[in-house]
Each structure stands twice: as C-alpha cells, then as structure tokens.
Image (cartoon, rainbow, N blue to C red; front, side, top):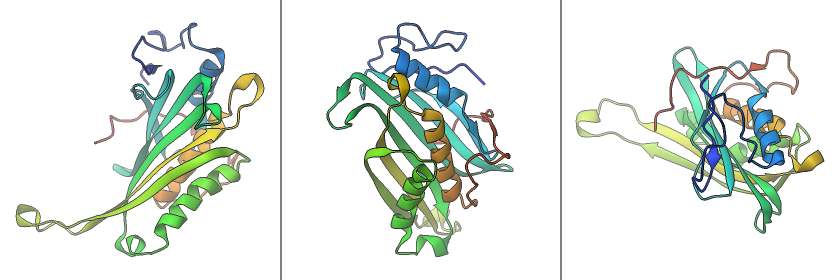
Length: 219
C-alpha cells in the first residue's frame, strides 16, 4: 500500500513523509487518531486505501476510500474523512469530526421499499451503538435515485442507487483523541450492510488488517 498523502486542509504541506509517518508538526491527538485508522483491523471483504483529503474544511484532514469487493465486483464504495480543528468548532461541539459518503447499487425490490432511507440511517447509528461509540451532533441525508436508459443505451436495464452522506462528532478519549479505529470498523459495517452482506459481531475472528485496493474507485 502506498504511503498516505493526507495533508493540512489549507494545502500548507504534506501531513506525512515519504516513509508514511505523520509529520511531527501535526498535533499529537490528530497524529494518534490517524495512526489508529492506519492500524485498524477490518472485515476481509473491505479493500481500503488513503486518498487525498478535502481542502479548507478544517486545519487538518485525513481521508480513506473503501469498497466492498466480491470477486471482481465492487458491491459498495465510500469515503471517510477525519477532520480536526485544535481550537474546536461550534457546530461540532468538539475538535474532531467524521464525514462520510457511502454508495451502492440496489436490487429493484429493495429500491422500492418506502422505509429504505430510515433503514439505511439505522444501519449507521446501529453500527456505532453496537460498539459503544458516541455520535454527537449527527446529521446526514439518504438519497435514493433511479436511472432509465434510452437511445443507444436502451438495452441497459433500469438501475437504482442509494447514497448516504453523514457526519458526526466522535467522543474524545485520553489525550483528546477519539477511538477512530472503532469508528472506522463501524463505518465499514455500514458499507457491508449497504452491499447486502450480513453483519458480524464486533471482535469477530474473521477480520483482517487493511488490505490493498486494486486501484482507485470510479467517480
């Protein structure tokens, strides 16, 4: 896996050296939070890599992209961004914020379920709660979209997609650092549920360390 290229969100400089170590100039709580993300143990269906962090959302940011892979198929994909403002943020009620995007194709029967948005949101909150995690100031949207094809694309069957956008403030632990590894595991559980895989019990022996993706997610 290539060294992560997370950076200050103002573009002031790289967060990590070529050896993949977080620079000493980065605040210690943020360094510890990133190290925990990098050392997290995840389900074997998850392929994950660092990606470019967003700009100007917070003084410090780190981002991961992941996919649920079965054979050659990506069943769901998403991005998780860790934001940090050492001075605190009024809207966050804390110094850290997690922001996510999750996407998946849907079976027609599932797409037609009127309760689908509520169910998808409950997957996120349930994955966090089952691990004893706090999700302060949580907010988000669940969007269901359908595509119909015409003309030269008319042979394609109709397709439906679900997209979950959410953000929440993780509770800060000792040293002001949240348990980002467990938040990442909960987020990956959401990815797997959206992909149609059954949930696993936290601490399941089948989890593995971060594997390497074959390539970047399509956009």
